Image (cartoon, rainbow over all chains, first blue to last red):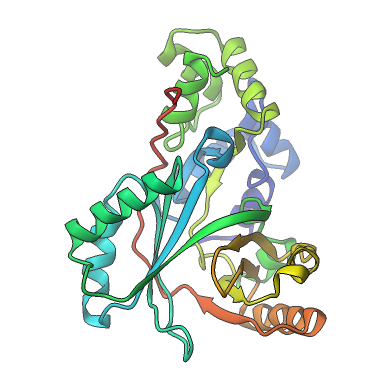
Length: 165
Length: 152
């Protein structure tokens, strides 16, 4: 579980690890915590899956991955876990979620493909459809165009304070 | 131009970044370079906007709640409406997509009440209807993204 000190630590580290010799010491100074405790807490949060990964967050667009496709499917609810699990195993897939259907939006399975261009992304989608047996299900492909805002999930101070519930 | 070191840092340290007192030194040892070289290479990647940060990825809905939101906005109003929405601190991604539903953004809030208050405020301010799509299940195991950094 996440306690108040974990939240305080995440609040400071989510903006990025400083580029200096002892970055965890620097983070510790911001939240009044010894370096060893910073490292111990982060290690535990990672083991518990409350940190999904710790590392470099790349900017796909700037690195030449210009085509970002969100693909949405309408699949039977009883197959969604199996299909979602299968889709997630492809290296070009960067997200895979279940979301609720809507009266005017019948889709429940979402995945994201980052490709260097539209043609590669569509090619990868075709591979995915074949390998996972998705051809019988209704889908739509939504390519991104302008990016108005992109940043990591910033959990607001109030968010962190209130997350205790 | 990306050097070999840049490419290694981009591809090999998206997950399992060292949790040790001298993480950049540990990376340097693993790659056979100096800590100073690692630090300056990361600084260059940062300055060139190739990375957004080094840090933790926190799974959605473990701290607070989040939802994807879709809107249909006439093209001539899109930039103005997008700017209004981006100004909310609770919004962290905001994209145009090629579809009738052409504006897609993610809202992160402290709890369900806060989330709905933000959506209501956005609907009021923009006068467009928002379709709320919270996450029900996450199938993805985030191991980072294998970048092909060869020139093409």
